[in-house]
Length: 252
Image (cartoon, helix red, strand yellow):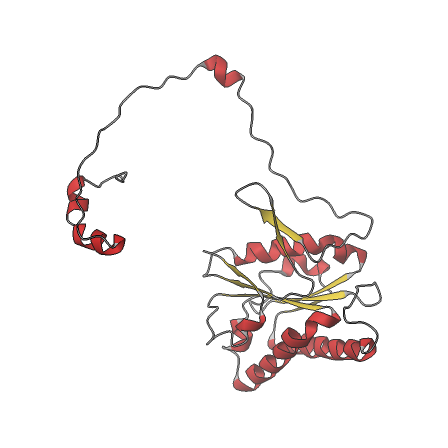
C-alpha cells in the first residue's frame, strides 16, 4: 500500500483488526517496504517536440438541415474520450445530485444536444423552472413554453397532458411509435427541481402533479413525450414514480 501524506506505518498498524475483517483474513501484518529514490531531469529539446494535447471538441452549431438523433443525444465526453450519449426518444431521464453537483450542467448539455431538432421544428421543449426562472431563463428563446410560477407551471402541465391524450387518440390503430414532424414535434418536458412540484407544493397541487406526471411517464413513450427531470433527493419519498424513469444519472 502507498501511504498518503501525513500517514505513517504506525497509522496502519493500529488498524490491523479492521483490515483483517475487511479482507476476510485471520491476521494482517503491516511492514514497511523498500523506498525507491532517484532524480529526474527534463530535456528542453524533448519539450520542444512534445505532441500537444488535442483540442477539446466544442459543440457544433445547429445545422441547416433537420438532423435529430433522439436515440443518442450528445451530452459530453467520457474519460476514454468517446462521446457520452443519452437516449431521449422513448425514454424518461432523472438526474439526481446535491446542490452544486452538476445537475444543471447535464440539463443544459441535453438542451444543447437537442438544439438542432429545436431549430428544425421537430422538437418542442417545454421548460418548468420552479426556482423563479433563474436557472433556464437564459434559454427561454429555445423553449416552446417556459413557466416558473405555480399557476403557469400547472397550465403547461395540463396543456401537455391534453396534447398527449389527443395525439394518442389520433395515432390509435395507425402506428405504435410517434415520428416527429413540424406539425407534431416530439415534446420534451424539462423539469428543474422536481421535488418543488411533487413534495413541497400544497396538497392539492401535489395530487394533480402526481396524476399528470404518472400519465406522461406511463403513456408518453408511444406518443412522443419525454420527461427530463432533476432532483436533489431522488429517494422514493420524494420521487414516488422513480421506477418509471428508465434512465437515471447520478451527480456527485
